[in-house]
Image 1 (tube, rainbow, N blue to C red):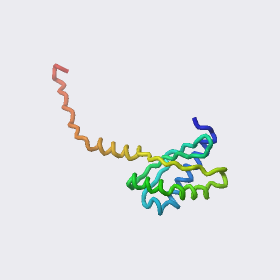
Image 2: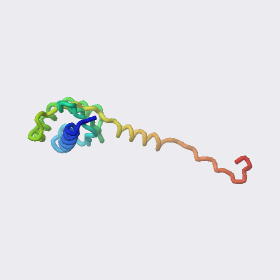
Image 3: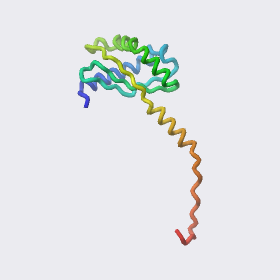
Image 4: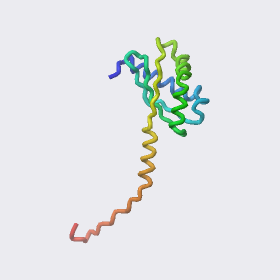
Length: 127
């Protein structure tokens, strides 16, 4: 269970990272849409575990690029929230594939070949 303080930091970091990926992050993410789906803070507020979801991108490649540049992302985050927090947390990114999985399941379901149910004959004595 997260404390109120952890929840407050989580919301702040989620909001700021979301804006950061939309604005300053364009050179890093290109046309991809990056969504910060969840942020969990460690009890000492020193580590932020961040779940990211991508649209219009090769997930693995973009995830690697973001991870390779997390020092720079942390620096940008520090510029945005440095006045309101004591420490800028270490960023640990995780790939949230729930949106991609949901899209995949939609595709699978829409491509199923389900035959129509046979019409029941009302005069049939067996029913």
